[in-house]
Each structure stands twice: as C-alpha cells, then as structure tokens.
Image 1 (cartoon, rainbow, N blue to C red):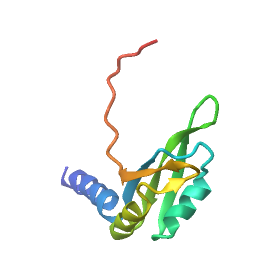
Image 2: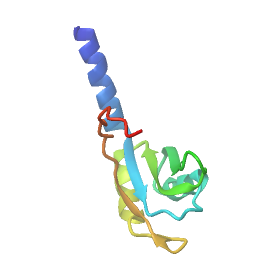
Image 3: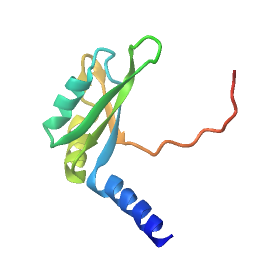
Image 4: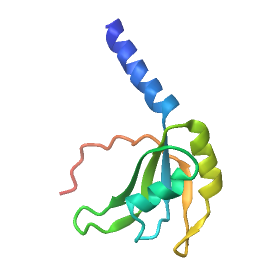
Length: 108
C-alpha cells in the first residue's frame, strides 16, 4: 500500500513540478502543431505542442495545449505570448486545468 501511495505521489510531483501544461486559446484555424511549438520554443524547451482538431473533419478547433519542460520558461511564455496577435487573432495563454470527470449520462 505504501509503495502505491509513493508511486502516485511521484507521478503527481513529476507532472506538476517538472512540466507545466499550458492552454492556448483563440488560435487561428490554420495554426499547426509545428507552428505552435516554434512560437513557444522561443521561451524554452517544449515537450509537446498539440492543436486540437475536430474528430470528424480534422479541422482545428481553435485551441491547443503546450507542455514546457520548465515552470519558469512556461511563465515567460505566458507573459510573452498572452494576447499576442497571430493571423489576426489575439491568442490567450493560461495554465491548463485538470480535466474534470464527466458523468456517465449518455445523450444518445
């Protein structure tokens, strides 16, 4: 039991201390993963950058997530890129929140 608790705590620390996940909204619908990565790489090492796309059409949904290796680099990126205009749209950069669990109520 103690080993399981330690393992869970280690994963929690690893995700919250070593990496910072950022939520980027109001992106141009033409922004790609590579372009998002390039924008944030100017502020530090980027672990991943993903523009979220519609399942059926493959078209961008106008937001994405960037995971940065360092909390301080992520803070610099937030300050430097928040409200920056890209392709005519002022993107917003904030700390991503944990996904809230959905109820099992099926609408269909």
